Image (cartoon, rainbow, N blue to C red; front, side):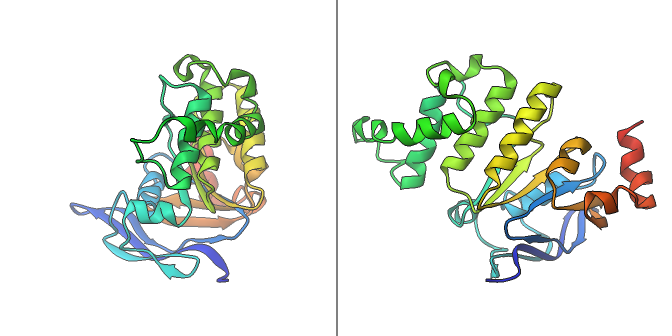
Length: 250
């Protein structure tokens, strides 16, 4: 196995003369929770879009488990086990949590497009779906309408549907955004639990969450790496204090 599950080499993205990401050399170790932080406009979401192939790099290379995946399509990346969640909850609001997780499990079995089959094949996945809902504390809400759930529970459901796809690398885009203290603590615990036997790369503005979860942190500024290290290391870096920490506490 290569040292890093994910690696970028001189990765750049230019938009009509604006360098959103510039010469990014990112290394994510297998089994780590790696946080990508920085002020608004630092290029964090652009990096995620490049890694999941929603954007094509202008220059540079993306390696997953040592394999060059720079020119692969989004579906190819997902099939390799790189699964992303988004800032805005991406579950189906008119379905129940059980149905949402069941559909994700169906996709993982490769039967997503077998529309001519009865729903019997979906019912066969209910035990596994309920186990996933139980793991994120949603078993008692399995029959509710997802759109009527509290925001924190929707994010927990999104983690469950992501786990249903059996990711090797989970990309979490601000999993605690817009939450109260209690929900932040619950989602932080869920992310930690979800990290068992897998790797997580996360964008997160809540520095307490980053300090609690991250094994390693990469700080971006203007699309380039400003600093890297543990929370203790980067939080004491004068450049980080000026560019990020200061604005976070302003």
